[in-house]
Figure 1 (cartoon, rainbow, N blue to C red):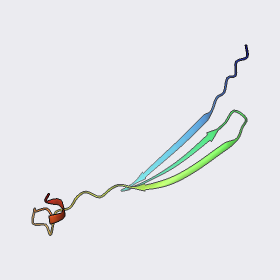
Figure 2 (figure 1 turned 180 degrees about the vertical axis):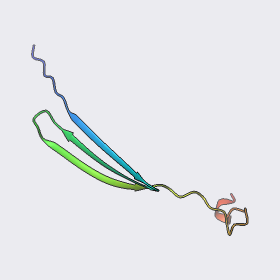
Figure 3 (figure 1 turned 120 degrees about the vertical axis):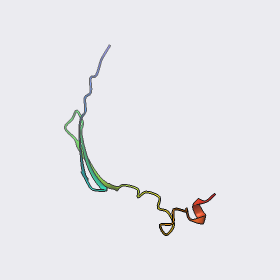
Figure 4 (figure 1 turned 120 degrees about the horizontal axis):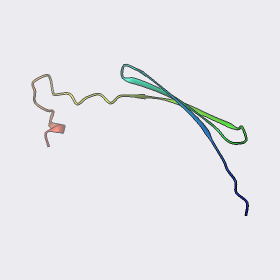
Length: 62
């Protein structure tokens, strides 16, 4: 019976600045092949009330 042991090396990095997050990732396979990726995301803004009156807009009133 033959057994194969395979391992991957994974690195991930995150940077947060205010409402923005940047991420980078690297995967190294057992044969030395590397895959890299990166991306950004923005935090979803909070729901705001209509004109500061404390009432929700008609679209949110349901």
